[in-house]
Image 1 (cartoon, each protein chain N blue to C red):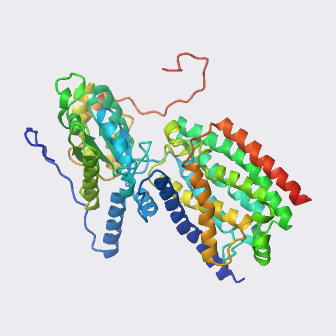
Image 2: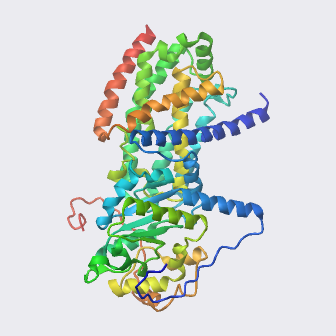
Image 3: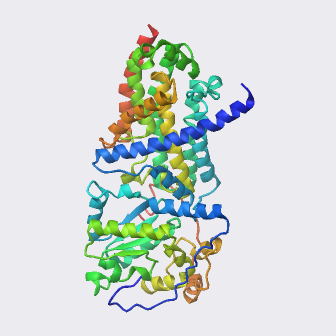
Length: 299
Length: 245
């Protein structure tokens, strides 16, 4: 591939991810509104929020790390987008693979931890300690799922995983071949998105949105952008591993939005677990499901 | 802002309109940001009195403020609107001012209920602040005892219109006439009143320093001011003097 094509792909992939992510955020808020019998926000509401936050005229910074932390949080996901194959664009997905992606999705949490640490707000510190605990909780089933998928397809290369599933049709999709792992993956997805019942680190009524408590203006705007990327990354990763990627943009986006409907519909029907209950739950059921799934994959 | 049947001392209010740039792109950009600001408002509720009871219906399924882009937020740093719903006692007012100064500009204050307009039924109370706009610039009052959700939403729509037209500039007034607001605050809280936010330095930094920013009251503040220091953080749970102090 010529370097200029690669440069265009590396620019386009995060950009597309951001725009799709905006609509995913809109869908999340619409689902919440419909479940509560409300009308919900207008079409461009996520964009209005982000433009408004970046156009605040006074910014309260708590130091250099506060700003670097936000850049890490957004940058980690921007890097992750270039490793996720989308229809027509592979970026550097063939060079990266699942393991690299796994690492990159952890960078945003660590970046937030750095940034929030400098704010010295007790609510923020509690929030970030809970966020890292949550990461520990959902990463165990997530790693099992990744390992199972890699064993099944015999590769950690996401482009190969998609190609194998598309060659064999719906019968060779990860979800039909490994239903237990797909189910465990849904649990991990719920934890990864930080949605109820695993919403322990945002908890607006308890610790005042935890990590975001000292973030205003461009900092909160950065986190809103991060949320778009987060929803996109989680959905596309699940589609790539279990639902055969996308043959074209229509099926790809259809599958990605459909995957997100599941955690979002669950989220707004349930209250929040406590931290220890979340760890108990995530280390018990999805791990057991995932391990049984691994046995089927291995045999 | 006029209140019928109530004699108010008139202060010269000088709010300069931002200069219209000759560049068409900068004008379009300004209008875009003004539009986005008006369509995305995060509210911080300071629920001091009975007016708070009318807000849940305004937010939930019957009236649904989110369809106008208005959603509740929990920390002053994230919020655009400070919503004060009811009487403000002297002790509460200190917290309201601390909260207001922590918010990022442009910020708007809405006073709900007659108690924030003129003291309402607490007019004769020694412990309440009567007029909220003596202590901070109020962009909009929603009068009533209590105003119904329809009135709250009508008021918010009016504020949205003001923001879109670039008229909701009360926050600049706080910087430009800080001496006036500080004077009223000192009248209630005493001469030694100070907040952790250095409003004068901020007004210089953001180019909002006016001729009424400094005055007799800020001189008084400088005499009594303790230098601002970062809070010390310690984890001495055995030391009983630190816990709960």
